[in-house]
Amino acid sequence: MALLEFDDVHVTYRARGTEVPAVRGVTLAVDAGEVLGIAGESGCGKTTLTSTVLRMQPASAAVSGEVRLDGQNVLELSWGKVRALRWAQASVVFQGAMHALNPVQRIGDQLAEPILLHDPKATPRSASARVGELLEQVGLPARRAKSYPHQLSGGQKQRVMIAMALACGPRLIVADEPTTALDVMVQAQVLDVLSDLVKDLGVGMVFISHDLSVLSSTCDRIAVMYAGRIVEEGPAAQVFDHPKHPYAAALAGAFPRIGDTRFRYAPAGLPGDPPFPGDLPTGCTFHPRCPRAVDSCSTGGEPALLQVDDRRTACFLLQPEQVTA
Ligand code: SF4
Image 1 (cartoon, rainbow, N blue to C red):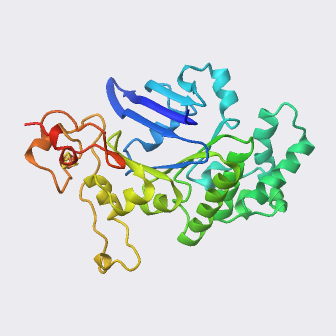
Image 2 (image 1 turned 135 degrees about the vertical axis):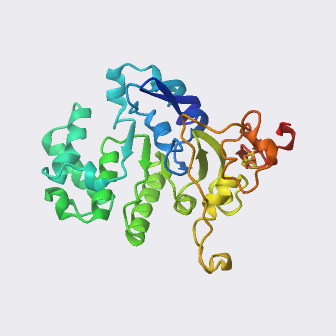
């Protein structure tokens, strides 16, 4: 049994009488000690999908399917059980550390809060000791507990957010674009911290990013999302170095690589934007932007996500028997 399993998960937002399907039938699994990367542009459903693990989606959203954490379907839990699960079994590292920390509270007090809330045996003294350990675990001196957020750099704040995610010893961490706001040197340091923690603590991690190059260096597997669905999923190095789906290829081609003469002048780009989830194109939803689209891609249904060699892909050209007339 995997640590986390998404089984045919659908999430539909309702706004002013309109239904907006943000996630459409995603099936994925993450094992303990494994890092799964989820890639895709903004609006492809990455954050909406992972928000279901801790039931963080808005009340207006309809969620179906199963999201099993350690075999337990979190979508069926009472709110009391969801609250107990947050931090203790699964936690989140949010994107904007600068905005996620309380600016008028010391770092140590913010880190101690979930410990005191979730561990009935914790005392202010034991929580304080644990805060020191957590800070050292993410490469910060324990004395930083006395600092306020404005006294830390962006990278240090993000390390504090990672320490906070570890505070109650969760089995799963969801890292939602944890390095996006950081410069490349600090980004590399934060990625090292995350990789070491997965190795040392054996936690499972879901790592969300639009940056396939970051995911390829951090993750064991990568799932690429487009318009609310997985379009390619497989071993990280293979998806980045030899993408099969045209969208995954476009994402991988958007990043320059040292020594690759194809990027002598500029990386290739992908014109256009992802479709609005409430008004999806017919056929393959990627066809208006796909450089390999053929006439049949825009008619009939969507390509199914099928296993091809070492990965799952959803493209008619990779599954010729799927092509519709
Ligand atoms: Fe492109 Fe057609 Fe494949 Fe969709 S099914 S990704 S439009 S080639």
